[in-house]
Length: 165
Image 1 (cartoon, rainbow, N blue to C red):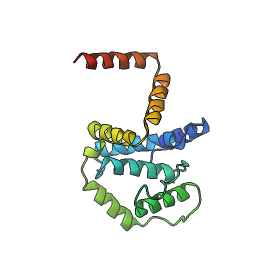
Image 2 (cartoon, rainbow, N blue to C red):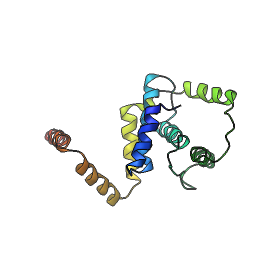
Image 3 (tube, rainbow, N blue to C red):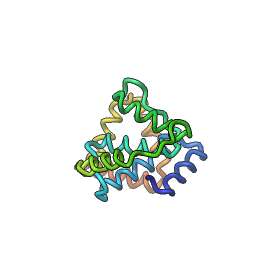
Image 4 (cartoon, one colour):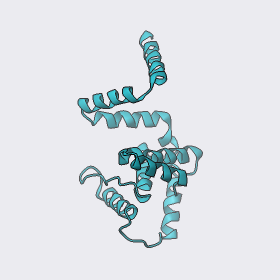
């Protein structure tokens, strides 16, 4: 269950015109924190992100399920059900305690490396490679525009120091 302030922040983001994926970021971040704190693990960084996105969908963030063929049928169905639930449609049956406990125990047996900075960086690079060069360039330009002068200066100094090596 996501914390109330994360749900409120997502609603505020959506009201300010931010995209659903941006609004869902807080849920993914919270999921990474849970893994780092040892509440449970995840088999992969992708799974950890998927859990956070599912939480966001169930909380009402209008994040569309992935298109057919991008993920397995099972994941597709799960995302569709979470989306329906968050939009006030779909079954309002209480969750099965036995099933919830089984899922929680399965995650507890998984490792904690999925939320490590190294694993997250690897996943980010892999996801970026699937996008086109123009898309990546646009994202980099937007990041530079929205970074702010202090952060931009720090990034420039870091880039200069790595070039020296």
